[in-house]
Image (cartoon, rainbow, N blue to C red; front, side, top):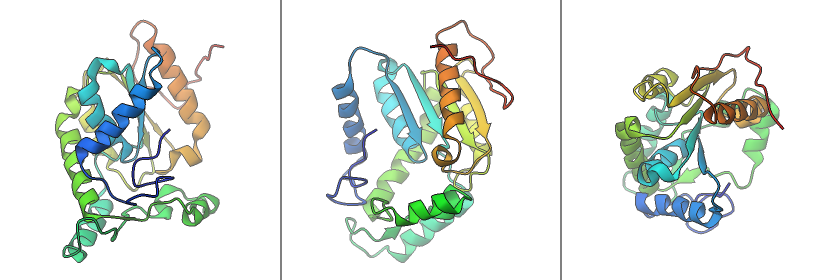
Length: 232
């Protein structure tokens, strides 16, 4: 995985981005650099799902499939309220000033204190963003939501059943507008930080999905009592 510009190991212009086009172009360059002739799948967790949809709409058949983990396509009422408050409170700040607090708290990621402490103490965690990034993120979310039904790639949707950051009901309703043969969905018993809490389950379901994609069409919904039969 690569860190988005302005986050992670990228120290320049923290919490900022110049435009939607720049973020999509970054991801496209990463894909092109890693291209080895093998099938390409994009995995988007949280707001990364928004970036994946925007990119997939441009790349089309160049992508073999998409995986969404606790997607932030439809934020919860609490997250939207926090974004509105932050935007209103800092409306007079410069567009490139990293002054807007993240709407996500450590408590939203996990109910395990060890994971919360890891997030609180992680020096690379991006805790503030610029008004410009919030605007770009909102623009990309609108595009992703409006054009989600245009996705043509096989898709795996894994939602977090206890997610406080996303509206799971609205998310499932939106994905049901895609052809049923394209979408495999499941809900895991965890909070938003599902890669912390249920990494094994995520891997098992992705492997099962990849195997099913290489076979004849079958049922496109998992159940929690399913035991994936994994090959070598």
